[in-house]
Length: 118
Image 1 (cartoon, one colour):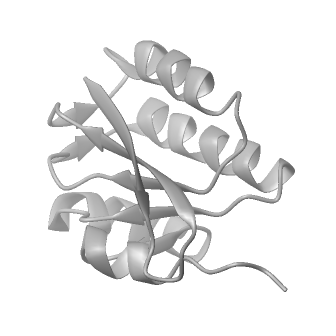
Image 2 (cartoon, rainbow, N blue to C red):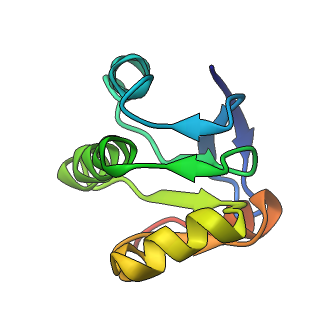
């Protein structure tokens, strides 16, 4: 369901990357995803979530992502999203969450934008 690993950004920052292996983030799996993200977020760190396999997200799925964003922000850590399919991009646009999240077309583009805060 979720796979996580770490990579170093071009600026030298260690970033935890989370990849979804499922194509949906809905009420059917949101609780499990939220628990797994919670385990990862117990250690505050820059986070990059790769949503390139995701084609459907509902309000529960959005809630999980917003919760992860709040957690990262409360620890002053960045969270970026990458690889959104058109159907997911449309949901983020309609709900205006595209203004809340840092969204990138590719994993590489998001990773390249991580930098140390002054």
